[in-house]
Image 1 (spheres, rainbow, N blue to C red):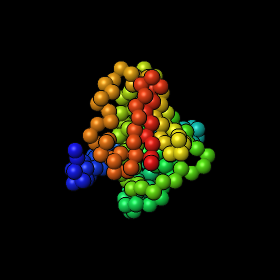
Image 2 (image 1 turned 30 degrees about the horizontal axis):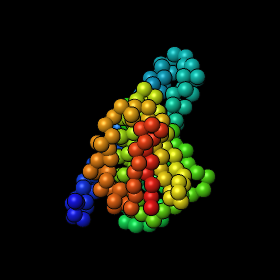
Image 3 (image 1 turned 60 degrees about the vertical axis):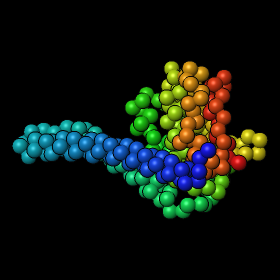
Length: 219
């Protein structure tokens, strides 16, 4: 049986690994943004040099390069906005949060990782807010651990659907369309890391291989 101290140690380690994983992914995304902007800035420089040398320049090439740069600036702004929201999730240790917002944030942070693994992420939220009182950062860590496992369990379907809703008066987060779940060892998940976070957040998890889904319920 885990002691409170051991659960805190595990949760701290989980949160640190999660933070490092997301920060690394965000930095790679931003580097890609800068690389594309730099490439198109170089093209514009070349086109300017051509014009200065008296060679005709197609305005369409300038417009296309500028358009690509604007698109990447907008992409970079979205990435920075997610990073800012992620950083501020540690401001309050216990507060009211909308689980819908947490799902969207973690899915957005995980977008590059999902893409590299060939996974299509689908997020479906209820029309009404799903408000619970909890630790935002630990909740994000829990959602990531379950999402990470779900991407592995997606199997040949290559799709993970994350939805929020209610079940038996409790708010739930459902990870579904897990075509490969039945072929994985049930007893290995949720593991010690996940169980520790579930306990800290007063939540439980059910793995249903037949329904190809995992449901996290907040009590």
